[in-house]
Image (cartoon, rainbow, N blue to C red; front, side):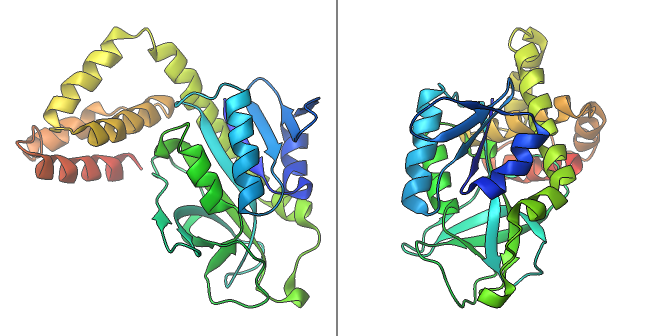
Length: 269
């Protein structure tokens, strides 16, 4: 399942319409879903976001292989209407940073976002919102870090005069990019369902884990990359053969393995 969290209805409306999501009679939160996507409107702010997402993932029986995506607007110093894929989240209150693992291809520029508990009328943060840090902390209790992602659209530059009131139009303007990413997530879930009984795939993971001299964390990264390649119909064999020719594989220690894994990631992405 692909779980989507939006703070307000206007952020969610284009997604509800695009994927023909039907409202669930829940009584506590506005939840919409189809066979692939489940969307919740969390309400604004860290507390609301954390409570709503935890409620949804618990209620729906979320597994570690599901995807959690936060889609919504943010303030920032960037061009209004520009969308970003978040690769670092810093909680303003604690100064703690979180790093969603970026495995999969997408058409958004990457950026860092700062996440706080109050609306800012002025600011120096490149991007700023009030939900991302809380959503990450809630989601990581249920899914792996490569399954958590954030797509943020700049709606204002910290000035009331710059605020875009037509939020749903703003989200709708980047729906082709959002749809591209959601379809990729759906393909990955579909391919994983087929791979669950594929002994050859399991053997490949085991063999490559040895070749990359993987730790548990490295093996999870490798698994994510192989699933992405499989879903995207990328043949990894030429890449691996080239790495063997360059004597990058097999690795003799974890340092070499990390370097080889990063090279492999760059070749795929």
